[in-house]
Length: 490
Image 1 (cartoon, rainbow, N blue to C red):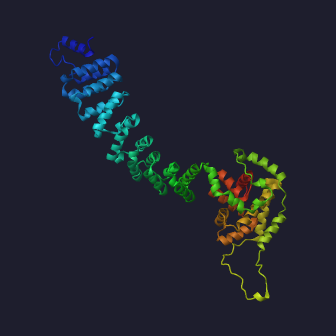
Image 2: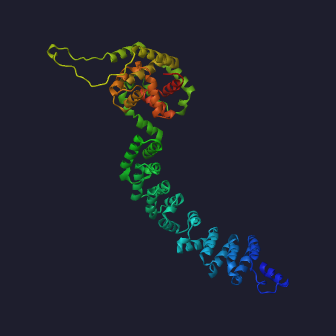
Image 3: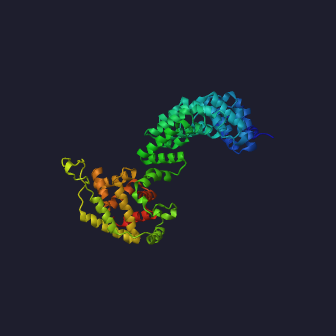
């Protein structure tokens, strides 16, 4: 069967176009426009067009050869692949412009033959590799792609991006470690480079991750998150110390990332680890005298999400109100007076008249109106009675006993309470401890504590937990106190 262009040429000659050029196909741009439309149909039409172009290539004017190549590269499918591979061997298409067109067309093919040709050309002439070819290497991942990409990064470090770094990490391509470290230091896709280094591993990779985790910078948070992935057992102690210090001294995403990594390192949930670090069980049990109370149920803090529902809290309040013993506030008043009336009990012996009392260089507590203190305590007692019924007095006793204990303690929990008082009242440690010794007679003391709980622990769950551990309260009791304090001024 005659080809499309053979028939077209014959008709032209019959019409009277007797010149040699007129009877030769592909002599004008219009010829190639018609040929392109035919080739894009695919199948037999595509084969006819491309075969005709290749057969008549020597007769095509040099200024129209790129038009001929454009027609061939527009031919779709496997027929087009084979045509492009054939024409790529012709001497007329060995220039840079032609090579680029051929490579761009073959990169669209899924055939192994086409991929091998592309890879061979890139290896022979790396200068031809552009962004589209880098993308092809990343997506197709042919044999030798990692070496080609690394050579490109070494020659042009600025091309290192998230995609290339991620590829090196996924392949665990160790030769890329120096280039990835350079990327971190030069702030070129630092997070992706750090992730890749973590996957590849090794002493150099581990070192740059640790160094980046210590220093402020764009990759610090990512580096902190990757610390638990370091498998070198000889560095576990160093990593644990770094994460602990970062959590303790850091802020924002740096602090939260340190907590998440530390929890992962220890196989714990971040929220549980944070609670343990903020209020260790040993600290609370050894610090609060209130933990010695016979009602041990007060330290059994529920952990289910159901306990956070206000309606459940109210039901539990009614139940516990029947169980809690009624506490006479007169007992608390006596306890207050005992703390307030502490005096020098040294023997007034006649033989020691010349001994002078020790002088403690301590700033006096801030002036407090005793009547205001009693009025505040009575108001708080009324609020707790309205909120918790008969159990309100017992809850207040727990809080007051804790304040007495914290007035003489140096524990982290005591430091938290002292910090809260300083923010509210000012004064030095000695002055604040005297305020704590006043218990609930210190005006606005509960408001000072709750304000600091909210300031230092933004999440509601942590606020409930902090209050529960500070005063050995049940979870629902702490939740209720926090909720009521939003409506009533403590």
